[in-house]
Amino acid sequence: MLGIVEGLDTPAGYKAELIRGKIVVSPWSKLRYKKVMKALRLQLEQHAPEGHDVDVAPFLFTFPGSERGYGPDLHVADETAFEVEGRHADGAALSLAAELTSDSTKDVDWLDKMATYGQIVPVYLLLDMRVGEINVMWDPSPKGYRSRTNVPFGRPVRIPAPFDFELDTSGFGVPEEQSAEDEQR
Image (cartoon, rainbow, N blue to C red; front, side, top):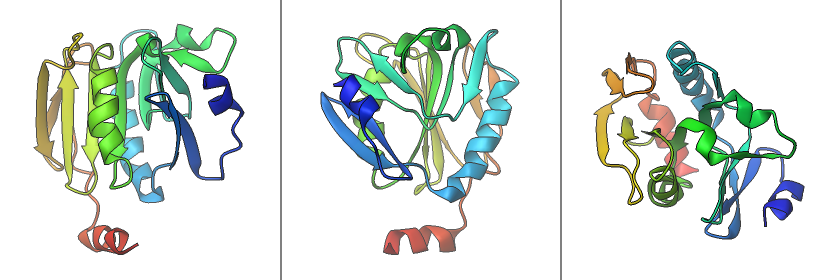
C-alpha cells in the first residue's frame, strides 16, 4: 500500500496518506496557515532535541504494524531518519508531530492520528484553527497519550520534554471574517 501511496500523482495542493489501511487524499493546509506554521517552526527550532530537524516538508512517516503512513503538517524528527534509502521515514524518529486541523481533517487528526501518535510520538500538537486553540498531548503509552492540555490562541502553553519551553501562540489566530468566509466555501 505504501508503494501505491508513493506512486500516486496527486493533484497540486493535495497529499496522500495511508489511514487504517486505506489511501486518503486530502488538501494541503490553507495558505493562511503558513504564518502559523512558520511561527511554530521558528519557536520549535530553538528548543528541538540535539540532532532533530524541524520541517514542514511533505514526508510520509510510517508506523509499522498499524497500516498508517502520515505526512504531518509540521514535524520534528531525528535527522538520521532521512539518511536511509526510500521515501518513507520511520514514525519512531518523530519527537513531535503537529497538525493544523480544519473541518475536512479534524476527525482523522483528533481520532486516528492521535491514537497512532499517542503510542510512540513524545509530543503531539493539534492546532484547531476553527476553534482557535492549541491542544498539547504528551507522555505516549500503548493506550495513547496520558497527558493533555489546551489553551486558546493568544495565551502561552508549555511544550513538555524533550522541548521544555513556553510556546507563544499570540500570532496563531485567524481573523474572524476569514473564518466565516471559509465556512461558507
